Length: 363
Ligand SMILES: Nc1ncnc2c1ncn2[C@@H]1O[C@H](COP(=O)(O)OP(=O)(O)OP(=O)(O)O)[C@@H](O)[C@H]1O
Ligand SMILES: [Mg+2]
Ligand SMILES: [Zn+2]
Image (tube, rainbow, N blue to C red; front, side):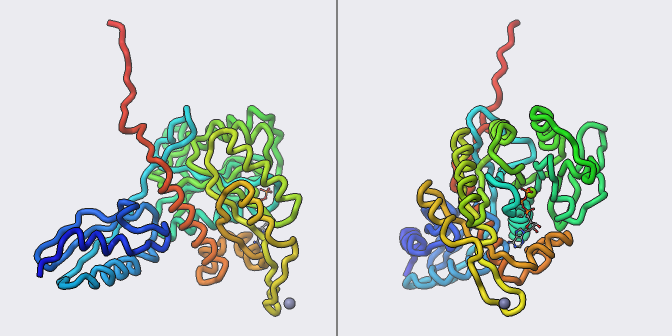
């Protein structure tokens, strides 16, 4: 009995991808379906990095197709292709960078940098090429979190800089250029300028996701940045305290105002896990992040515990995702990172590269 392409498509329609929560036909991931007699071969092209899940997905696809009556050999080739997606109106994507993800918070000290570095590392672990830009000019923390204190970036041409490498990430921070212990006095325009330079004069190498650790707050500096940096989507980090949540709401509004879509909210220091006995306590309250997401129709991406080891590992230059990859916290970071990648993949593609600039010349 010959198998039809329709039968293959019908079977694929019934198989839901664990990350997109959709079937492979509607996400157009199933491609190149070849049927020869009873044998079927196809490609599954995922739009998000999923190194840890490729085997599982291939097995699920094959198992599903094997349920087709009369089926012979099934082969599925699962690959990943991360595309560039649209940014705010009027801005162009950065050369060498497909997608910029801003990690922001209204309030300082909520764990924005910790979250940014772990999410960046998680995306890299899943096979993406990832950059991390520390946009916190006032208090750069990525040099320490990545174990790069005291290192300086190279410049081949005296103008542009090569990012430093740590745990497979391409990293850039003002902290690589200045002495962190002698605080600089920046005026607003200087901050924006310094940041634009860091962003644009770094030789980012084929970056799928550039995670930007934004300076805290929702003042003019942050607003200018949000208007000038071509961002695919923003993530808001908050703690469950009322005061942090009020500021997080301001952050959400700021991004909405400049046309940057909110990918979702991460609640940090959500529950305290005692390192002695493991008992759990909601020190800062409960449910605030979820509530905020409901109010703004935004996705709650996940919650990280308040855990001594998160701070210790991050301080020592080996953030949880690389320092304790088998921990529950690392798992939460990876789950959130995958979700972010999926949501970025769902955004409209950036087509600016497909439409060359038209130059009108007077002759
Ligand atoms: N989930 C967590 N559990 C325990 N400690 C944490 C957690 N998240 C962050 N920390 C610690 O809290 C402190 C502040 O975190 P972090 O520097 O990431 O915050 P931030 O929002 O970037 O701060 P800033 O506004 O100063 O940039 C750091 O010492 C960090 O190690
Ligand atoms: Mg920070
Ligand atoms: Zn205890």
